[in-house]
Image (cartoon, rainbow, N blue to C red; front, side, top):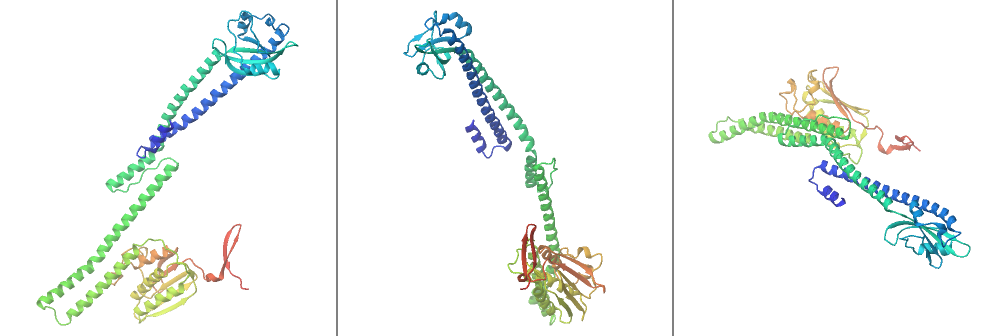
Length: 484
């Protein structure tokens, strides 16, 4: 049984419900076997103990009867003993035996009965045989006539008792096997029904592999397998959403690349034709080369933005805290170079956080570049870092109400921005970077009508070296360190 179970469970390509059925059957078989053996052993011990007590009681009565005339056994004969279904034998301490008159078979004594006769203490009980080899249950008790020491030995045939025990063993074995078969059938049904969600998941995975269709599975019930089904459906939904975003990204990127590629190809063809025919007027070749350089710059920016957006959303914390003022000042240095005729109104309060300074600088630079791009000549760009919020506002035409929900979408451009340079990914990078740092960004309009972007980043205005942790039974609290 154990070898068969081990062979079944060790075959990895065998269906799981078959292995579960075998496991359930083996568990029930083991329980039935242990219960059956225990029941048989306990019943055997109880039957033999009861038989020994009956023989001892009979021996007590018989010893009083024959103690006055041991040699003639007090008048007992084989017929009287047969009526009581016992056999009697007296053993003297010198190993002499006395049998009832007319007895054809007598019990075969052993050293245990001789020990009772000689010591005259205690009693003995064992399974033995008579002179014809029949099985008997034999007990011995002390007996004396005042002169000699004897042991009164009584025996009862075990044929009827052994037959009862054989019937019991057969019944336990038969019903145990039936229980194992029934348990196997029930286990097979339970395994089939219990593993049905897994089978549906398997079929769904095969269907996805064969058809490439990310379809959800209908959950049923409230068990762990239902939770697994819901997790699978969540994964399918996430994969479908990721695939849709990927398709949109590829489609939008292809659309954005088509126009500069066409322009670049036209310019290159003009240069090739000019080399062959000299058809361009003076100075046109230089303009075309500058146009090509600008288009290559747009390609470089677009590819860089696409690579940035393809990164994982998870941000690995920087080992050192970041002072956001340093990040904003670095971004302002770049923005001032790109908008030399603009005025920057900057007020920065300290904000310390953990994150990627390069990513945050790029995000803030994108917002400042957007403000520089749409600000009128001589306009003012306002930058405020107050608390955990950064606000960047300009005096440009602002963002239309219809465009506000879409400004952070990839490749989205409003009607006002279609003819301006850029990849259409800058604000998407801002949203992704801020979200990865646990914050949020939103777009709006200033009171004067210009564009306004607000960033919220979790941090503290107190430097880390001035903070301390206090732990009590309710948790850990970070508090400013008291000065000494």
